[in-house]
Length: 84
Image (cartoon, rainbow, N blue to C red):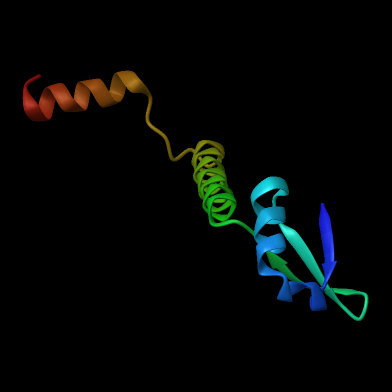
């Protein structure tokens, strides 16, 4: 984890390098966390992981609450509806 004071944001080349090499850079103001700066690829990967985790949680919730259909029932419905 990289932590830099707000005044160091002026050195954009260095901040960009830190983000590309080590992930998010945490920016402090008066000693307190204020901002997080990250590379766009890291951001997109993180957001994709969060989205996928949400889908998994939705599926687990469906399973726990009985909102699923077993594979044989699905095959039978498809055969009946489409003659496959």
